[in-house]
Amino acid sequence: MSGWFSHLDWGDIAQACLDTLTMLGASLVLTVLLGVPLGVLLFLTAERQISQNRIVNAVLGMVVNILRSVPFVILLIVMIPLTVALVGTSLGVVGAIPPLVVGAAPFYARLVEGALREVDRTTIEAAQAMGATTRQIVTGALIPEAMPGLISGATVTAVALVSFTAMAGVVGAGGLGDLAIRFGYQRFQTDVMFVTVLLLVLLVQAIQIAGDRLARRFSHR
Image 1 (tube, rainbow, N blue to C red):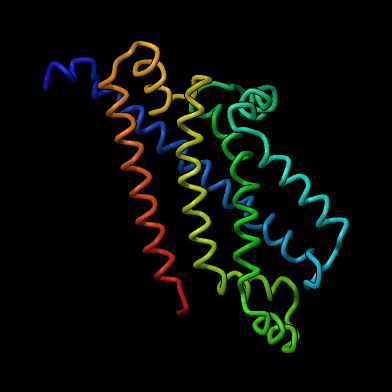
Image 2 (image 1 turned 180 degrees about the vertical axis):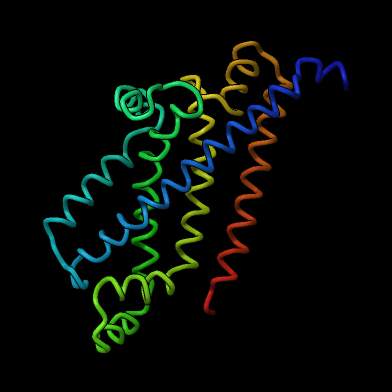
């Protein structure tokens, strides 16, 4: 058994885990910070909503749909000039974060929009009847009521980001995906591939369990 794991360098694996967690954490925070306002705007400007605006909604929807339709590997390559302009490099952990955010934020925005649509219409009408402004309705009624859905959406997005970080290894972003590609695939080191895949599976399971528990805690049911 020890011979089968002869290719493993636990120092490299530990560093790859740290890189993956760094990419995941930073990109998830930025994705939520961008995705929530974008999702709220998509919801508010939709037909029969508080700030109905067909033009704004159509433009936002088109941009979101275009970004969601681009395969992430292609997005990584297309965004290289913009990534370099933003963070100074297209390589490593830092270089992977901009495309990760651009790839995940539109996805999460649609999940946010869906979660807001699940909020009981009477909640909004009651807030309007009390003279609440649009901002007060969003922050005091919509977001709190939709919180379980927002957390579940963030969990789904985090799981997708784990896959994205693995794909980012194609362009030298580092992390477990990079380790799996450079050693597991290109050098046919099956033990390295097995361990990296196992760690990614465990990470996804941990994210899903934590997200489900957090969503239940905020559930009003």
